Image 1: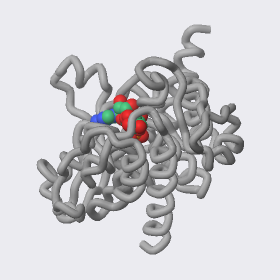
Image 2: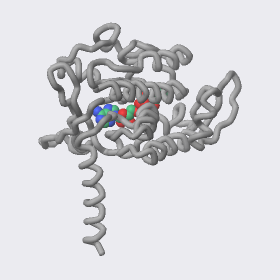
Image 3: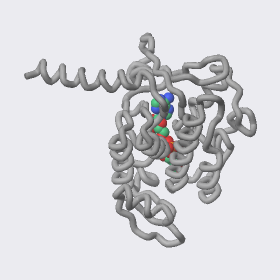
Length: 257
Ligand code: 48F
């Protein structure tokens, strides 16, 4: 039986990897904004894959606030939580709370069920670039990168790449510093995020979500790196709205192309 188990895994995995070789959208990181974006894009019929360096997708949701495993969301997102099937409780001041483990797990399942491919334990270590645009990702196993093993990566092509790497904003920095691409950001660079101001951060993260150069988009906390927005801590409305916004922008751009 063991050979059958092995072959079953290899066949299924390489089918997924083969589908990911040429994508409509490749998302870097599988935090809340990326999972939300992947769900919307895949539900619209686009080929989508998330590449996440950790074993568990879900990014910063699991740990709630300081490992107290609850998160806060604006109450106007209650219908979205209901649609996803995430239980929530009123918390006053227009807020609700939700169990962070339930929210993380549900966002992952929702993205998968919509048809998004998920590659965990995979690090995006570079971009594929053409003269003026991002054209795909350079990927390797996260443990290989962590161990600094001298192993060449492989690449996936994508019509749109999304930097959803959270606070580091790694991919936008790579595009500008190594890829030599002109960023269309207000400062033409990556000013970095600002200190905590929850209300302002929630608004800014959505406002700064968008295209940063041809083929490259940014969402979630990485958008606040690019736009110089405030951080907001364990409130996740902006992340979900940002993911939805980047997905809608990409769907429009791909339809126009
Ligand atoms: O940080 P993260 O959860 O992204 P997000 O969608 O959400 C931010 C919130 O969790 C929180 C917050 C809310 O108020 O401020 O921080 O912006 O998830 C980012 C994911 O990207 C992965 C990383 O492991 C994490 O799970 N990641 C980062 N760089 C890479 C990567 C990379 N180069 N390759 C693959 N995955």
